[in-house]
Image (tube, rainbow, N blue to C red; front, side, top):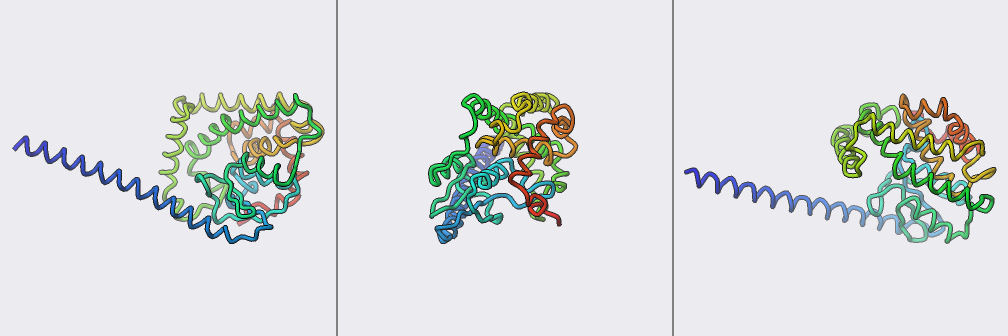
Length: 283
């Protein structure tokens, strides 16, 4: 009797494993099919129009995606006309933002910028020195690849229930918020920074803001007297600390000892976002 019971349990475990494997494959297949169908629809977009696919408008600022704000700011700096699509924020590779232009669908904000620079023969770095560009690039990578994990910890792990202060959350999405919070927490752990305590994570990422503030110094922009291309990304990241993380230590730092970062963001906003208020979600 005991042997039969053990064999039955092993059979059930194997069956569950097989079903899990099949289910996982089915979900991936469905997601791939869904993306392909969505891209087919955008293949029909007018070839002379650039479509920016990004997150829907948010309450304190146009986008709580640093990469969405980065790419949209770039389009404004480069004076490239665009149309906004917020119904399909996630595109190729499952990333946002992404663009559609002349039948090409391209994801990743940095790759989009590099592609458009070549396509339109654009250079936004003419007034910056090599040293300024190098320092700005280093700051951009630091903020995008390190600081933003602190933002994820604050928004989606420690304060997931306060997300509605930043954006309108569809009813179905509200139901899966705890799952999404768990998934992002696992990503933090897999990246490595999530193995530390929240206090340690905030200390590490606050240091990134101190570094960015020191690099900016008394300059108007990271590119000097005029913004450079990297200013799009730096604005996209630092703006999240100022307007997109209410009650955080990031916000307090930018309001206090790192006020040059807030003054910098205000200058960028004045230059390229005259319609900032109109681009916020007022509902």
